[in-house]
Structure formats: C-alpha cells, structure tokens
Amino acid sequence: MSSSIPIRNNSPSSGPLAITSSSFNERNNVLMINNNQNSYQQPSNILNYNQQQQSNSLPHDFTIESSMNNKLTRSNTIKQLNENINNTFNNNLCSTMEVFVTDPPIINQFMYHKWLEGYSIEETSKYLFEKQRKVNNEYFKKYSNFLNSYYQLIINEVNYQFRIFNDVQPYLNNPSLFMSCETTLQMAPSVKRLLIQQFFDFDERVIRELMGKKLTTKSRRDLDDISEKYNLEIISVRRQFDNLKIISKFFKSIDQSALTDFTGISNVNENTFDTLMIMTRIVQNSFYLPERLAEKYVTVVFMGDQRFETSKRVMKDFNFQDLFFFSSRILKHWTLQARLLEELESSTSIKATSENTQLGTSPTFIAFNTHKTNDEPITVLDIQQISLNFVKFRDIKSILFSDRSKLKEFQSIVMKQLANDKAFVENDLRERIDDSLPSIIKSLLQIAQGLITQKEMRDVFIDIYEKFVEPILKLKLTNHQLFQILEAIRESFELTSSIKPHYIQKYKYTFSQFMIVLRDISVYMHKKSIN
Image 1: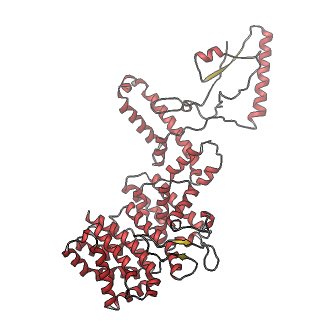
Image 2: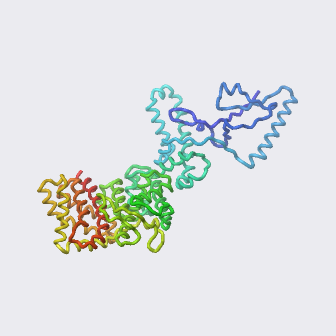
Image 3: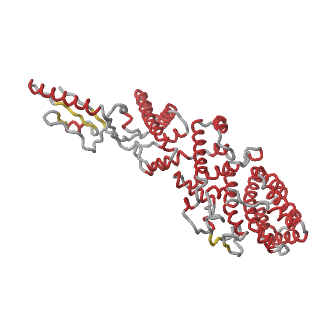
C-alpha cells in the first residue's frame, strides 16, 4: 500500500485560448515547486522516487511514494521517523515562513484589454466561450458533455489573469516605480513597458469631452454621462480620467524645476526649442510612453491649463485630432519660441541671423542662454506659458491703417506675390481678393489684439472660426489659395518699405509667429468646413 502527493509545476499549456496549466490548480494553500530547481530529497531507505511512473504518466509531475515493509519493526521505524519529520516541519517552518515558487506570469493580452475596458470576469469569460463556440462549432457539438467543464476552465484562467492585473495596477499608476522595483510578480522590462503603454492609452472620444476642462471633482461626476454617451464601462472612463490627472499633477509638481534638469542642454539650435517636443520628451522619460501618446497628453494638459473653450456649439464638430492640431500649433509657436523671439527683438541674450528665413519657419537661433535675464534658470512652467506679446498688435494695426499709403503698399506686395502662383491666374479671383484684403487684414489684427485678455484667449478657436473662417468662405477659395494668401500677408509686413525699419525690426517676429498659427488653424478649419 502506498500513498502519493502530487506537486504540479506552473508551466504553460497550449490550446485555443492559451490557458496556462496554473489555472487547473487550487492556487491557494498549494506549494508550487519548479522541477528545474533542486528539490528536497528524503532518505532513500524511507522514501522512494518512482522515475518509471513519472516518465510514463505525468511528465510535469512527480510523486513521492512511501516504501512500506511487511516487517513490523521496519514499519514502526518508518512511522516514528515520519512523525518526527512532520512535527519538525510544522513547528519550525510553517510557523515562521511561507514559500511560493513560480514562473513569471504569462500575460494574456486579450484579457488585459478586456480588463482595461472595464469588463468583469464573467463578461470576459462568456465572450471567450462564445468566441470559441463560433470558431470550433463542430467540436462543441461533438463534445457537448464537456462544455461546462471547459467554461469553468476559462473562468479560472480569466480570474487568475484579472488577479494579476489588479495586483499590478498600483504600480501602473506610478510607471517609474514599476520599472525600477522588483515586485512579487517578476516581469521583463519589455513586458512592463507594454503594460504601462496600454494602461495609459485612451479613447479619444473620452478625452475630447475633457479637453479644456479642469480635472475637478465635478468633472469626475460627469464621467457617468460620458460612459452612457459612448457606451463605455465607467471603470474604463475613470481610469482614463485618473491617468490624465496623474500627468497633469506631475507637470504641476515640476513647475519650478529648471529646464536643464530634464533636457541637459545649454546651447541648442532652433528645432530643439520646441515646447511640445521638450515636454513630450519629459513625459516619455518619466512615464515610458511612446512619443505620439506622450504628445497627446502634453497637448491635452496644456489645453486644460489654458482653459480653451471647446464645448460651445461652434466647436462641437471638431474632434480630438482637430483640437490636438490647433493646440499643438499654439504650444509650438506662442510659448517658448515666442519668448525667444521677444528677447531677440529686444536685443538681449539671443543672437540670430538677419537673413530671410524659409517659408513657414522661424529665424535661426545661433545660441541661447537657458537662464533668464536675472540669472534664474528657465523652468518647466516658463516654457508652458503663452509668451507672444499681443499688445504689439495695437501698434501694428495703427501703423498699417493710420496711413493709407502704407496699407496700399502692403496690399500691393501681397497681390504681387499671389500673381506668381498659378492658382491665382483668373483676373476675377484676383480682383475679389484685392477688394477683400483690407477687411481680411483688419480681421486678423482684431483677433490678435483681442487675445490680450484671458477670456479672449480661452475663445481663440471660436474667434478664428467666427471672425475669420466663416466670412472667408464667401470668397469660395481652395485650401491652397487660402494658405497662399495668409502666407503672403505674413511675409509682406517686413517687405513694406513705407514702414520705418525700426518698427519692422520691433514687430516682424511677433507678427510672423502669430500668422503661422492663424494660417495653419484657419486652413484646417476651412478644409473641414468645405468638405
């Protein structure tokens, strides 16, 4: 008579659902032993390992069998020794430690996505079961007696996977900690990165509803409406809200940190001083996110800080990608670059070439001091602030419209540049544009000088659409034609000889940076309106 104790190894098994063998075990109060490691060997005269039975029946299991002897004295000896071993084990080991040895967890990507979407264990299990039924319908009919057992196996595996995800979630909320520490669940860095990226990924429809809003308790209460509107699980919507709040709080926590602490630069070229690129790099390094996803988070946080109005009726037709483009243009040209150009116009710590720049680009920076004029370092907060000096547009408007000869020359230069483009060969079109140019220029300058106030800055997208794009639709221009008109206006300011040179030097960079953003946003809105 013999007794056996099966001890299973936690190794994966193959199958249509890639269910691991660990799901077939009772996971609580079971000692998992890796067969690749040296196991404890009992004395050979007491316990015998049956290798023949192991190789023929259970390749991943082993059994410890007790050798029983018919002789009474040998039986008593074995019994006494077993009692001593058990007493020693129970008294000395179990009372002081618990041991759990296992392989790294195998992450099922499909189940992870379902967990991120907020599905329950039962919902995920039913989905998987029905999916298998459709694919393997003949087998399901043939082995219908085993369907309940198969469904229970799926439930066990889903439950196991979801327990892993719940255990890892606190670390996913802090990616730097997750990547640096060794948790109970051992994972490769590549697996951790993948989990983090998918955890911080979001549904653009959800974030569109949050763009331009403060992430307050009231906003969190509105998540139920977003969940119902897009038929999403509330758990998933809350996760996306919380992730956005985590990154927003992160930027607030580093507001006063020096820019060089993150970029490690002192002398840079023009392309490096792109606020969107710098902030994206900071998010990438801190949260281990891909570049595109990091850019989206940076832009959304920027919109929330500036409180851009995105919920009014006129903005309803613009989706996440539209608003992302609008805000990214402002972040690029009206923040750090505008700050550098303002210092350039004031002839302080920046040196620049006075040569004409290429179409749609900013002046080339030779060197830049990453400290303010009072020797304080430029901080992360500094580069996020809209720094374009809109007060100057009062002077620009006064210069152009106070003297008709200056406006006439300015208008003539614009039309001369357009005449070189094949898109403006029709005389009737050129006449309509020429007649409309004064009102077009005036509308642009009115929008610019109105951005002095915080309220007007919040409504900048609405102002561009209502005060400029809608009226320009009457001219029935193509997108290319509108782009060329706005680009000609941008370039013609510094070519107007009747404007005094020191005025041109004082205002040309500010005017150019404003026109780059307004040109790109207007053409984008115009394209969406005519399509």
